[in-house]
Image (cartoon, rainbow, N blue to C red; front, side):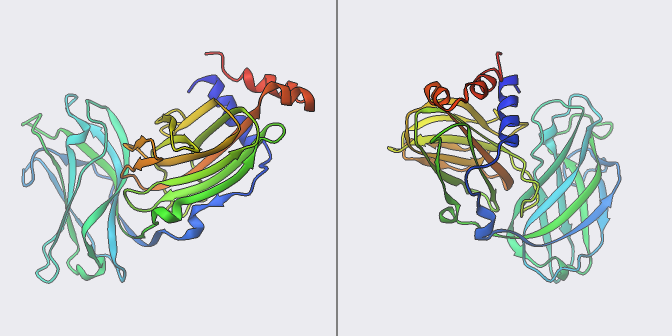
Length: 328
């Protein structure tokens, strides 16, 4: 993260918001029921294909249930044993052999697709069939396996501190994800803010904003600590003009894997900011093909009018501070 962007984000956090916050959480959506079981500290061996004696098979007790789960979340830490192991090859299968309620679900690890040492994973994936986890009275077997054999003499990688959860999520429709941030930039440095979420795959949020004057617009996503879904999401962001023309887009320009576009020079007028999850596609329209991530984020927006506006208002000093945020 370059210094200028960091100073922009600091200025956003210190400024007093001049606009009301739009909150997509208020429109509904997110986790309404969930239940978790800590499988254990491990380590659990990812050795070879399903059924290999090199794999660890652990038994997980029955869930209480009483709700219709449509997602499963798996959290843990993956550590390489064979340094040539690809992180994306380590998968986990959760299954029940109950004759009344047979169940099998393979979680595809979303981790790095190259050699690694260790990393934490936390990812929810949709279940192909809605289930009540409490109906599986015999509990579940969990097999830690590897989709490719890198080391026939032992495990390729190991998971530890594994927690498995069933979650019931309700959808947030695309029409719920349209918000108006109002007008900004009539005078000096101003800020707008919003919090949003993607509760299910393939969703995105649109934020309309009016710039009263020409100037520089900065906006980035960040963690939403008070979010409803309760997890962060890797975002992508874009901005369109009033005709729907795509002006700019970004993946990881914000903090961490969040997105950010800074000091974008714009004329006065109406604009639309689009926020979606990783692997989105933006095009004129505005058109958004959303990624598959779920979770919470916050959207932070700031605007600096053209320098003449600052001079008239005696705010030149602030303008200089903002312009010096990054020299790199």
